Length: 144
Image (cartoon, rainbow, N blue to C red; front, side, top):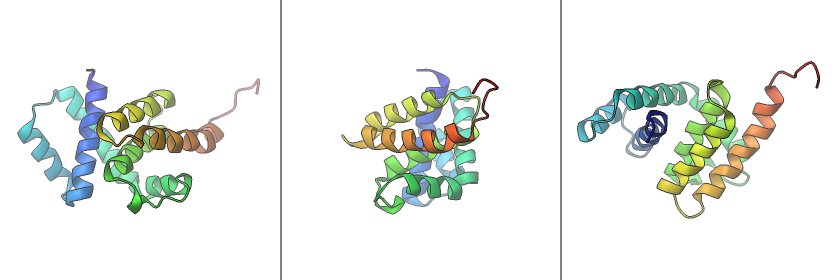
């Protein structure tokens, strides 16, 4: 498994622990590192993602709720909610990561950690955010 994929996995687990147990992110990272020995590259990438999500969480949550028709964030499963937060952060604030990669990785995380319906749910919301927010905010080329 590549460092970035593992980093995303770690990030989702940290975000989940902080969300469900209400622990500070630093404590969640310490607990994770105490039980597992992640590669430094994966851990560093996870920290970048988690800190980014934490910094932009209010905006990210509002966007997820806007595009998750009839689903309040509080009604979503904690794992789906945190996978969506992570991928939305990547879509909006990580131009170094292609949007298709962020969406695909989120769907894979949903398959691995979520319920039977998680992958389709996550894919649908992220696809809507991509089409309605990311694509509409990309600079147009001269030919367009």
